[in-house]
Length: 542
Image (cartoon, rainbow, N blue to C red; front, side):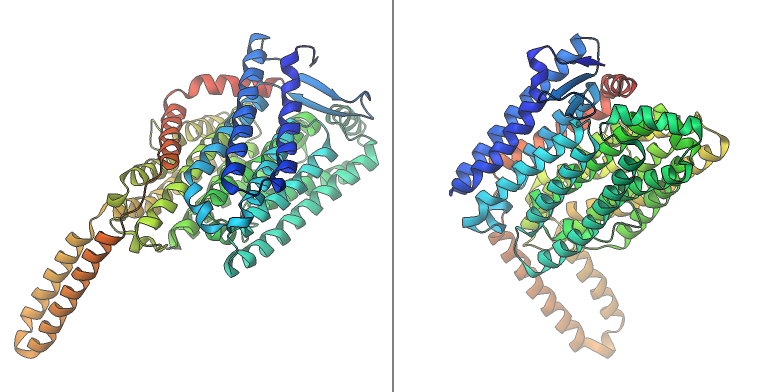
């Protein structure tokens, strides 16, 4: 661990301050278009600073840097601590945030009231600020403060659509989030009570002494359990997921993308830091908490996919898929090995790039189909908006785990991490991976096929089948047959009318977003090894 001396190592602090100042400025900018441009400029500046931090860290040998806030050293002051893993996470979060906004920009201007659009971007700034703080902080209580800021901003962007459905979903989201935050706060309060520290490094030393002496064994188990449970609730790990489908399914497209791709992951990154920087994986294993996380992760992988399989609302289906993917991440943490954590971290990134692409493309396909959310009624929508169809197809195949796409490497590493464990873990993990992959295919592939199937061809075959059936009973139902043909003609006329008048307007921002998401997905799937090396180096100095 090194103190910050290079000027570039001030950038993480500047990133947090810049996004916070952006949030303060937004209420004074009444024009939503200008607010959005400023917001994108802030995201670009923060992303650029994180590129500089990552490059400098790698030049300096992949070390970890401590940045002291103010003039008060530990244990009284506050600190930022970052290494390669934090820098790559922050950089990717900025990129995903920007592309999620561009991908759903049309819906933002449609769903958010004109006088409130600047406030929407205010919350986006605060959301990015809180995510960066969760990634960079070295203080448990600071982590809790930004968890609460994150919760408020996330609820606000759900409610921004301002419909009865979103208000109900927001209230449910807020109640569950506050429950998770409360458990987390109880955990760190008890931890402070027995150690007297809030900074992570002094906490690690104190916990090590307690474990060695055998003192406070049961309270320590309860504390780590409360912190883990709080994070599990906030990140929608099954069975604490009930708030997620409503919130993600009813929000405007960009909000759904950001919530699923980024917000859920910020809490998990904090938990990984707590495991390595405060508790240590050895203590987690000794207290059997990793086994509990493994079980919940495996169950979440399967049950999230089962619920997605039953869902017909396209955005809710994607939301349930997120529940399954969160299960993957917790399963990797529960493996208790470096490879398992590496797989979990990579899956955070692959899911962060894939799920917003799915939500943004789904939003465009819904628009192309005349605002039908039932995926059976999305038939032919990909032919009206081919770019959205391609993006949804690639995203769905990536979530299944097809090679060359972002979802494959993490599954490969999950399997490798399981092989390094005992036979029981190997059997459980490989079985869960196989079942979850099959279930993913069972709900993504029909949706993809349906979107690329032309309406007219289906109706022609449908009419032909009915014609054969009526022909067989012509002596008994000639009038009924004529009536069916008349209805078919009416439906054909309606579909032709729909084809003429419901051509979607594809914006430049949407094209830019989808192209970058698609390129990132294939880049993660093909060139994953350098990124895995950075993650491994970052975990080693965490």
